Amino acid sequence: MIKKITMALTVFILALTLTGCNGNSLSDTEQVLEIKNSISFDLLEIENNITIPSSDIEGVTLTWVSSKPQYLDIDGTVTIPTASMGDQNVDLSVTIEFGTAVTTKVFHFTVIAPVVVIDTALNTDQTDALAMDFTYEDTDFIASGIGEVTLVSCIDGDTAIFTEGGANFTVRFLGVDTPESTYRFDPWGKAASMFTCDKLTNATTIVLEYDPATTRTEGNGRYLSWIWYDGRLLNLELIEQAFSGSKGVAGLKYENLFYTTEFTVQDKDRRIWGEDDPDYDYSLDGVQITIEELVTNQELYVGTKVVITGVVSRNLEGHPYLQVGDYAIYLYIGYTYTTKLVEGNEVTISGLTPTYHPDAETGSLQLTGFTREHITVISVGNVVEPEIIEVSEIDIYTLSKLITIENLTVTDIYVNDITGDFTVTAEDSSDNTISIRINSGTDALLLPELFTVGTIFDVTGPLGRYEGNYQVLLIYYDDVDFK
Image (cartoon, rainbow, N blue to C red; front, side, top):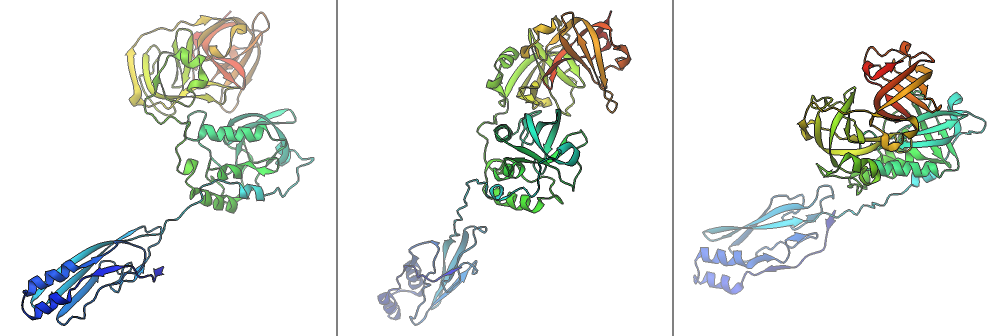
């Protein structure tokens, strides 16, 4: 863009001085310096054309050179740089010649780029305009891929559990990937989870739509679906609200819409695209608290950084349970390997983030964000004695604690033929039910054949919870005593 408005310029090349020059009152050098000092500009930060001085005085030559003539030419023409190029610094130099004397003066200009004002307000224009192009009456999602369902529980921003015809199933939302808020805690993860849960909890109608261009389920059995609540596509709204970018939409039904929406939202620099999450703890270490304080006041610490000290009571496939007295917590370490978390070690670990897995209603509290650099071993060889407890005494404050339940009777057993994991259902003498979970990666001596219906046994292990049901996690063969 070239602007044609002339700015003020002050040039003093005094006629009297030059007249005196002809009378040899000043030397050539003195005369050139007089001219140099007389040339000035009112402004050096410019957006408009400027007037470049010239001399019509006999014997005086002014020669101008620009370091960036594409922005400020020697004739004073100013070309405004684009906003993406930013302000441009230009050196405009003049060489003054008079007689035998020559000197140069340099002016440092800045050509100002336009300031682009971006509308950072988030909206749902695309979601508002989109409508379902299918019918769902008298259809079934599990059977046909489209159907009305009922929310059972929210897991995070892009996963929820629904029910249809009495069967519960987990659904992973197509086209999005919100920040984590379960097995680890990421900026905007909690906000995304709350947004999704609010929409689904308050919806009158929830309809799931499969995409024929992809598989019905993931490898872990979760269904993949577009989520419509009250006629609105939640997957798309998550992108418009800057809780997610588009993820894995190539070739899918809403591919183009998701891409164009994401590009528009990115420019707003909101939430995941550039804002700090006010609810996320960006500190590195955290506040030192006891496990008891964490367990009994969970909501105060979920999503913050904490420092925890405890003794490793059990280690389940690399993930330890830390306990002090009557309170314990599970530590999810991901794929990080360390020899410092062996049973009996008392450790202090900083920089941990408490989260729920999968949620507070059906799962349990856990610690995430573990790194090897943040662990200190205080002592070794400690023994955590299990507490003998009745099934009826179990509550959320017992979770992760090492317990023993005596005189249980096997009533049922379920074996996952794919993973080899199995779950034993048992009752105590008061007909209270408890599950015993055995993962295939634990003690090889723990076989399903040991738990025939009617078998009586005592069991020791940390307490967990799955889909709202309490279960003892059996890790060692020596932790079960058959009667």
